[in-house]
Image (tube, rainbow, N blue to C red):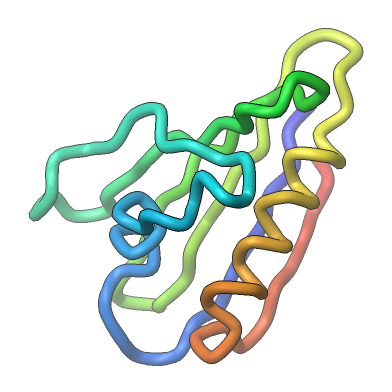
Length: 108
């Protein structure tokens, strides 16, 4: 199952870069697992929960032209993405509330 999260942002630097370099990410039981080299268009990163009862990962991509952070929550088997998705959305609103203009969540 995949869930798509679109985060429409105000002007500013890449929110993906800000997230993967945020030292407080660990306080929300999230960690950067992989990230693309800086300077590449449409940079991406993979965020995982380090909590034991969370399943799935978030693949996040920044589109600078539209200022949209695209996040795909991917999990395998019978796992439900609601917990890792909840942790990530909580993190976004706690740390980046001023940048967020809209959040759309679309189950697929």
